[in-house]
Image (cartoon, rainbow, N blue to C red; front, top):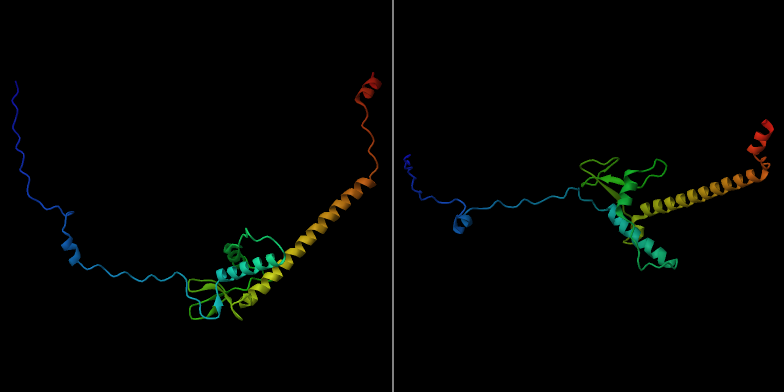
Length: 187
């Protein structure tokens, strides 16, 4: 038979678990003060408004226009601010959206960079006249849309009239020869 060897097991040492510190030890340590977070965007100086502020005024104005026209506005769907930012990003050369890029100090720049943010010049009081330049652009845009729709409708009507005139003027097509008649003649 084999003999079993005795293995000595070392006695457990008294150790202090670091995870079980006393609350008194934690309170004596000083916690670092929280740093104030700065906004990502520069603050706008007086005389400028944000595209979102313009969008809010635009929604109020559009809703008032719809009510005046007798439309039901109980389930009014607001104009989304992303559309305004799309107009800013995709400005046309002929009639660009009236945005300026402003630093916190009030300096206007031609293009957006890390120190600027898009803004609209303010004029007038707290009504929609405050964004007079942007509202004037909006009205011109709506007229362009109506003109394009009218031109597209006219073009479609002209195309339809031309197609119907062409079919009326065309001579009736000769009926296709009967295949059986060809076969009989060939025999």
